[in-house]
Length: 375
Image 1: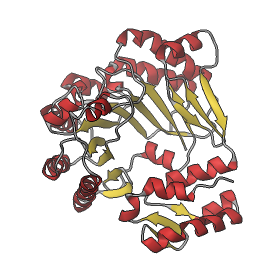
Image 2: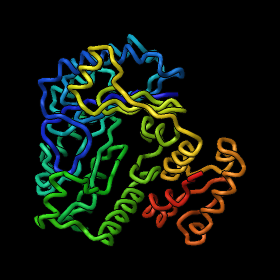
Image 3: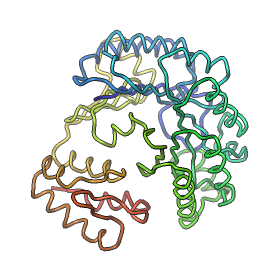
């Protein structure tokens, strides 16, 4: 099963921490939609396997009207067989989820919402330059549930400047009280050249210590575990049977097509990425020119990607699969490299599976780097 990702590049305003590609200029919207329709038609033969998921990401896809989202769906339906699609996700911000908007969404193919809460505290939201309030966050989730959306994920960020264990626990308690079926929670990364990095460098904000961030991660894991959520990927928690199908496909190496400026695609052998510039994206598609770049993944790249994605999940690295995909010698090398982490208690082995312990989850990027091959 494959997936389709659509990058909708528009945002109401720029969040202080964000380094994703986006634009706050909506005057490109009509030309973008036309170019996206053109790209959909041109890429209709990219996927050979049945399509299971469609994901509207961004940016802020809820900046589009529901009629515009339906227009994109119509273009997809014209070029792809969507009869086996089970999950259609829309990333949305609370300030967009009015009753009228949600009522219109309920009559569309979209059946899952991923809501960018980030924090329920207004002081945090102001620092992050979010366009919504904590109260809007609460009401948007409750409103969506009342109108029949039972597949809802919400995003939270830990490690925020000025955050405390008390304020973080309040965020967790509020999220749990909403009884959504999925929570994604990420540690704040201070990206270069963002307003947030500038504020920290100037001393206007103080980033939490590593020990404080670890305590917040522990609270996240403990609170959601106690509430019945399964920790199936380092940053993702779900009630049983409610895993995000689209994102799970990424971690399992399933093929997917990315559409829209800056979107990525993967066909099992090559990576593709669209240019991160809406004006250029539109222009190239209008002129019939190539609007993406690509690279062939050699066996080393494929192995390293397998390690990086699988290690983050509850399913872990499968030694038998490593041998089947990459050969017996690569499996032996993996066992040699991971021995130290097994002894240190960062990784556990159960039959052919290698998975991270809690301590290992805190070191996931370093452990993956230790396991990468350079040959």
